[in-house]
Image 1 (cartoon, rainbow, N blue to C red):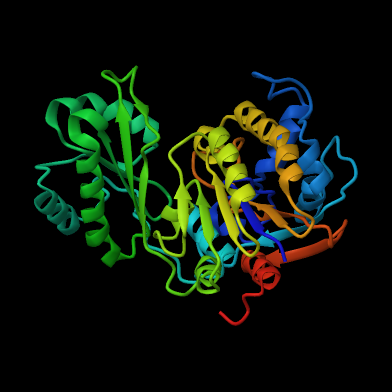
Image 2 (cartoon, rainbow, N blue to C red):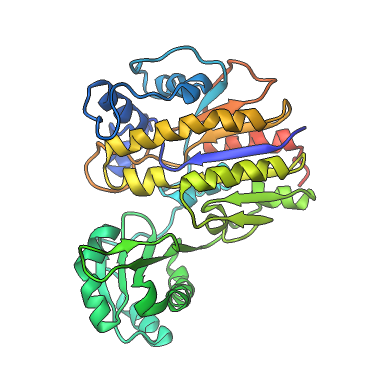
Length: 393
């Protein structure tokens, strides 16, 4: 037995979800759209030509994409690693739902989402939030893109002191406020109160969205985002690792995603570049039987939601160049899985996640060039449980 490393490239779907039409996402294909745009010369901002991800290709991402959709993408070569295509069984297409199912909890019911009306949040709960958090009033109160609503309401927020509240297609209530004028601690406390109020409606997560700047042209969201999420109702892969006497290290959003449960230590609040380097240090220091669970969110937040094909391609190529460093520190017995939690096709209409299947790329010296075919998200966690010998926990 070695160490287990589970990496989630947030939103790197590979199309083909059979129930995509239920979510109005039929035909979405995050990786495929990016690869085709690169080959067609329509993703050449800051880069040029065909998508260059030789290490992901080596692990089998193009092969997985072909299994998922039946399409052969251009510029594909051989696969050495083992791979599969994972299909989500849970209801929803958001980050926590995807991660929870990967780690062992499949949710067939789903969470409450808000209708597209203005005001969007129920009056009873909003009045309770305003009173309990002592915030007098709110701005926004509708479906909106995070960056756009800060531009729209940010100056009013600075003048009034009212926080900006909004939602999306996911089960989420987001609260944006200026770090200095409103205060970061006050924003977190307000979100914690909101979580206690809106959890009764089965709203899955409350997100604190701090920002800085003085005018709508200058506003920008900071790295101090904080998620308040209900943990899964059953023990997950993370909990089982802890109960076995080993450690589970969270990198990026992982601790937030699991409600800060089942995590021995966590590092977050920095760019994906820096998180990757920190992950390398954690892997080197970790012991046999430990789990390193990482989420790299910028594929989703900076490029998927912003519908930036070129940016997404650049981010994939940049990540791919870092993989040899990861490979070089792995021991023969270590077990690496690279996967995703949903899609976010940058060529697709709108700014929301897309319901897609995801690649499962596996590196372990006992598994060479093996295709596992179509599996469920939960099978990823089961694969790692078997590797770590966690069946009794």
